[in-house]
Amino acid sequence: MAMSINQSNFNEVINRDIPVVVDFWAAWCGPCKMLGPVIEEIADELEGKAVVGKVNVDENQDIAMKYKVFSIPTVLVFNNGQVIDQFVGFMPKAAIMDKLEKHI
Image 1 (cartoon, rainbow, N blue to C red):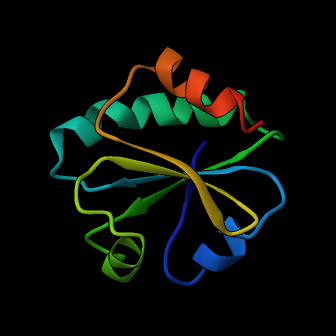
Image 2: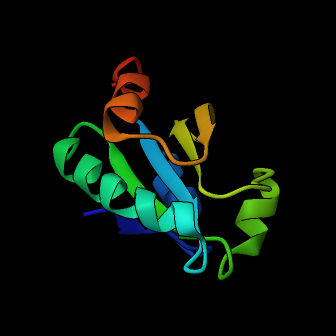
Image 3: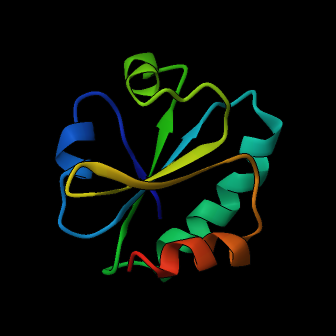
């Protein structure tokens, strides 16, 4: 299951030495609703290999602004606190896994 990431745990989560996949989303966003179950499946599949989490942009606007998240869903991939990959918009699970494989 994808972990809930917010202002209080964000820095601790992204500064891990394994890849951290962060889905920036909002409850009112249609494409986010489509991506949500895909992110949950990916979280289950990558357990132990990567951390997968979700940031609600309405509740955590400071984080979204810091990483220039202007469109949602946006997925950022971190390693040791640095953004190493990103994509915007809905993507099917196979396409996301292809992008993530090179980081795991």
